[in-house]
Structures are given as structure tokens and as C-alpha cells.
Length: 104
Image (tube, rainbow, N blue to C red; front, top):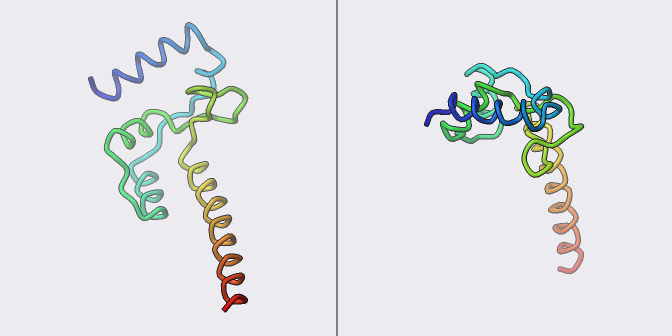
């Protein structure tokens, strides 16, 4: 089953059972936008993930979660979340290094 068919089935289910979630799905992104995220993150996304984002670029807003009440992140939200978590990690590493240097 290809990603188009998978999404058709998901959309049918959402329209029937959770139209409020279906209405939050964004249109897909271009290959260029996917490539920009891959370059920013220094990774290669799996082909199925790329195919999925070509169909839907996550959700608009976060009033209702997509899978297990979690947000289906857009490429922009992925980038923003990565920045936040990277800054937190970098800050924690600096604090740890500073503490270690005071001990030595």
C-alpha cells in the first residue's frame, strides 16, 4: 500500500470519527521544503516520512491531537522544537562543564 492510499484511509476515518482533527491537517510540502529541513537537521528522512509530508504538512494549531492526543508536527514545528531542545541540551552541557571545571 502506498502513502496516498494510507492517507486516503486515514482521512476517511477522520472525516467520519474525528472531523475536528481532519480539519486541522495542512496541505503537503514541496521536495525543496523537505530538503531544507533535512539540511537543517543534518539528516535524511525516510522515504515514507517524506511521502507523508508531501500529502499533509502536520496540523494547523494544536486544539486536538492527531495520534494518541499528540500533535502531528509540521516541518516548521519540527525545526522549532529541535531548536528549543538543542538550546536546552547545550545549556545543560555548559552548566555541567562549568561545574566539572570548578571541581578540577
